[in-house]
Length: 345
Image 1 (cartoon, rainbow, N blue to C red):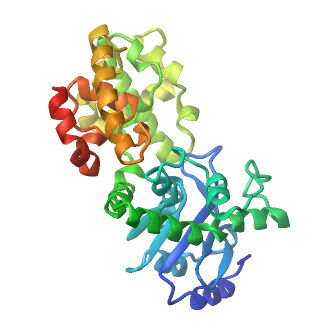
Image 2: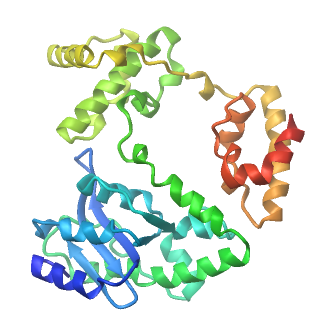
């Protein structure tokens, strides 16, 4: 395991000419808002190693390699790994291949695990002994380091097999499009004016209370980011709802902090939210949803896809209610479904 700047420099020198980087991370996110990055595992054609992020003072040489032009990240279920590295680097990969998404385009189970995919493709069974380990622990057990390295050892093999299959099925453009959707900075630094979408129970309160609830959610998100604490440590959802409904009043410090926040973020006072989209479907909408599902299922079958890859249940209802921002109204999905959607009207 790489623990010193010298070891890191030697490793980076050894992989200097490599562009295909199999990457995984281990992090802790229990008592912080941002993930605490602990390890970065990297495998190339010529080398595989584990970088102890907590032991190093200067990660810039690592970031220079990860984010250089020409480097392609090969990651399984990439979003959290991208986020963990983004929080420190404030950069996004130039190119990405997510093996979990690629597998779903080839009719493997949706959200297939790395272990299950590796077993299916390489006939290698990987142990899951350290899935609940506190990765800030030092020294790490030797078995944990091997476990972490296993998470990248087979990524390149999986990548090449999946890439070949995608090419054979004319789906390379699809995986490129899916990867691009993960390289949106808003995924990793969500705007605070959208924080109300994370509040459970908001759809059950009266419309008059929606505005205040949205403002409280924005304040909570801001405070969580500034203090680097979990948002529910700042204010639990049920407490937020109680304040919005006027059933309880915020204590002095909370009220003052909230007032100061609104005075400095005047735009937050005019947040417009739409809770109606979360209402249960009507009988008519249920019938329409069944019709739409059947049409999409037929198209999914033609392309060896699970329907969930084409359209989620929630997105079908949103579409019926007039929302054209859903995933199957864009990109390769819309290209396949355009005729069916026109017929469904």
